[in-house]
Length: 82
Image (cartoon, rainbow, N blue to C red; front, side):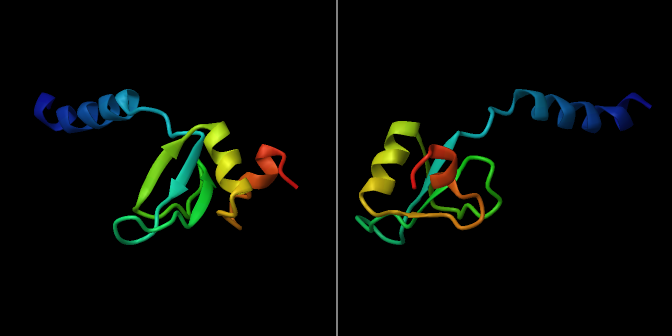
């Protein structure tokens, strides 16, 4: 019985120890030196595999420099950028 409960206990422990998602994410382009493609809110389901967590200030700067805001999570609206 204990052996059957161990995998579930390990899964639960993993969920508890997992760090929270970042507040903002920069989705990176393909290749070395490629420009970033989009800004996402940390909870967005559309974040690609190539990503980098960023701060609020970095997200605002990237949006100001012309990096596109995700159309699904609308980080520009959450950040107060018109």
